[in-house]
Length: 112
Image (tube, rainbow, N blue to C red; front, side, top):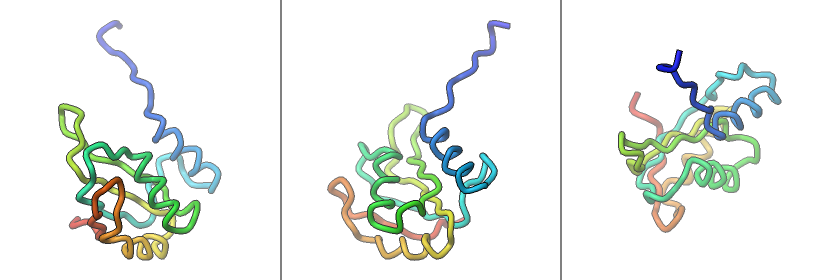
């Protein structure tokens, strides 16, 4: 049927699935601990954020990073980053106020 088109999966999702499989987790696994990251530069990508947390923490600790965008595709200036281990996520809270792409990040536990 031509009314249904399959879209390719984003590279960030494929990368997360590969990391999960390497750790013997389900492909759908989204981490043990999630953080809210605010005050992002609007040009910051999920990949930029993943690299920032990996380079400022324990290598291999980040499970996923997702910059939230609006219906127009533009960043809303915040993201969620999840970690394989709660301890690594709690350590990442120390990055609150650290600069990334010219902006001081707000890093905290999400409200939900």
